[in-house]
Image (cartoon, rainbow, N blue to C red; front, side, top):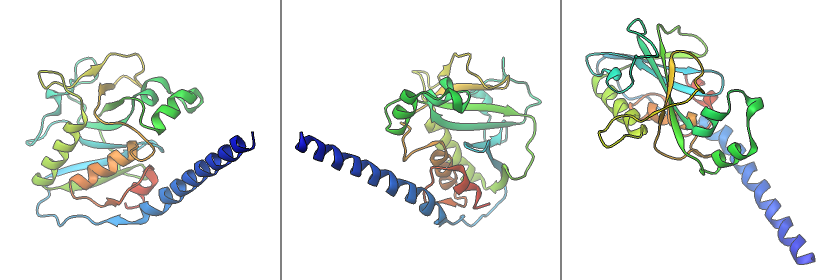
Length: 221
């Protein structure tokens, strides 16, 4: 019994130590800034958008460089008066089973924390963007935007015809959003905000070395 208690005590200490290091890293590492690339031309305006927890990357629905409606349809969601498309990556359980924090299940949180569940892309159409505390604007060159397109497209799971795999669900947040299957596993180290931060890295924008929270990203702007 004593040996079992000793082992249990060590395990608890390891767990406490792990989460202590994680929390410290989650607040310290985001302070390290990855600088913005030198901009050659200002070809495309994009945005970052937060709801206070989760960061989305917002792009023009249609431009000379990319027509996102070829992958994410207006039909049944929006129409051509919606000029912007917000996209975010995250844990599928959080997206589809947790409309409010009060609805969070322990099983969903555990699976998400340790990369045991699948992921989804959440897409939302907007008519306009209003820059403020929760929405920031930045300009990309054609080359930078091409890299961002590749990064975002690579996050969507595709079928045999290279089409994004839409999730049929009643868990939508409103009348202008939809969910799609995604690649990758969510975890404590790769969160929705880590995904958005990496999106900014992919196109040479100012961002954090790493961050699990939206605050780290928005502190740079």
